[in-house]
Amino acid sequence: QVQLVESGGGLVQAGGSLRLSCAASGSIFSMGWYRQAPGKQRELVAAITRGGTTNYADSIAGRFTISRDNAKNTVYLQMDSLKPEDTAAYYCTADLRLSTVMSGVSRYWGQGTQVTVSS
Image 1 (cartoon, rainbow, N blue to C red):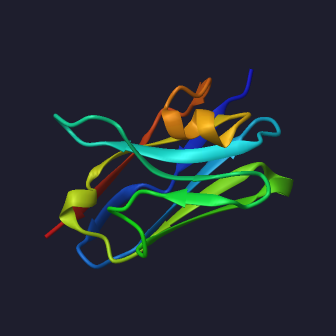
Image 2: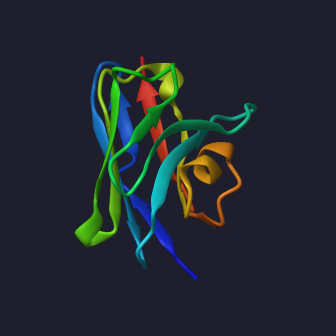
Image 3: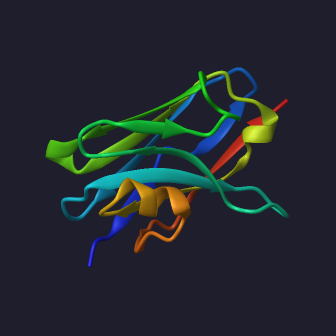
């Protein structure tokens, strides 16, 4: 059983930056970030394979960057030029295949970290 622990959320003004981290208790092949705002469906933000192949949602492309440190079993989400509409709970997820992570049916999920962007 793999455990995922997120950190780095908080309150930031529009235009600001935050970096989320997700530490896994074991070696994981593909990892990603989802977010869910109140009253909205959970959506994929970004995903990354162990080899560094990335995939981004159109809504955040160019503003967010996903990266990982395989030695630390940790994935990061650098969020720049934040907008009020980025306000959501952000969840780390992981599984063997990138396609599984991107489809939202991963076996492993973190507890979530709140990101609030004020206007």
